[in-house]
Image 1 (cartoon, rainbow, N blue to C red):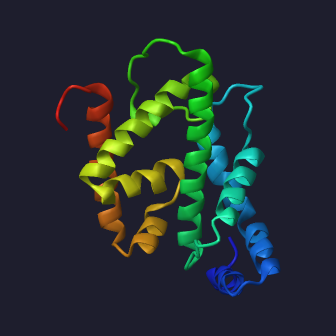
Image 2: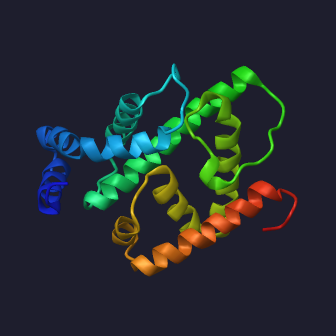
Image 3: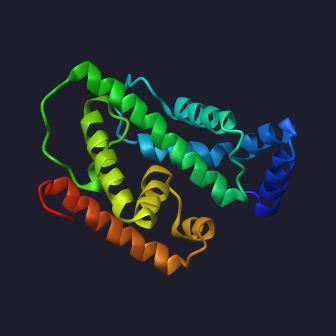
Length: 191
């Protein structure tokens, strides 16, 4: 990745209303965004309706359409992109689930959820429901899941975005995964 100073300069220029800087920022971080999207789409079925490029572009469009969002630095931009990718994937999963209307499926471990595979849309929706429940109990842990699972951010990037230490980001990730595991596997338990 190119130096963070380049990213920061592009962000500052984009926030100042320079459209060409916003486009350059996208070009500058495109490779990183593709890596994140590819990780989220790993294991998807051939012929799936959303590929890496499509996910990156849809997420970017969502970011651009929210002009009130002004990322402070590279990590913050990637965190916002992670959130946008999450919502793109959720919208697709909801649409797919409406089409299939299948019965409930057995819960899977958090790491096993293939977020882009059309036949696993129910798993993504169950994860989103659990994440929403976690957000009502602990916003910080839900934020970590969004950044790490949906955005593929490293612990260092999460620490930079949140202003917490790397060790805290790692501990929060462990706590969040445990909470979500229980919520997905023991839905009647009060987690």
